[in-house]
Amino acid sequence: MKDIYIQGSRDVYIVPTVKFLAKQGSCEISGESFLEETIKFYQPLFEWLREFTAEIRKPITFNVKLTYFNTSTSKCILTLLGILKKFEDDGGEVTVNWFYDEDDEDMKDDIEDYVVDSGMKINLIPLD
Image (cartoon, rainbow, N blue to C red; front, top):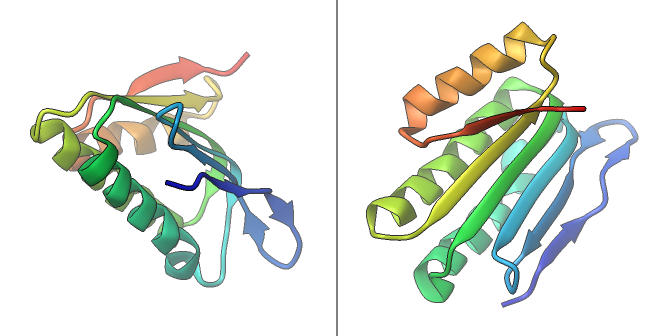
């Protein structure tokens, strides 16, 4: 299974950095995500995660280090969490860590909404 690495950029649209590493069982999305075609960007991540959870089936750590994201990205994050929840419900081991600025109350509220909406336990980790 191939890894996914996308270098974030800030051109017309803001693209997050993505590191999905199969051998390590780790996924990370960081930076900011404000895209024109959000589903098109995130679709390969959905597919990768579905393949990993169906075929590799080893423990996975999912790290989110987004400082800003738009509404369409929020929906995609919820889809990713849904894939992880299904894997967990089927006996898979999942750790979700969300790194956030402690002063950003809106982000903390968003993360708490993800916990409710996805059913996933999310570890809140303050950024240094």
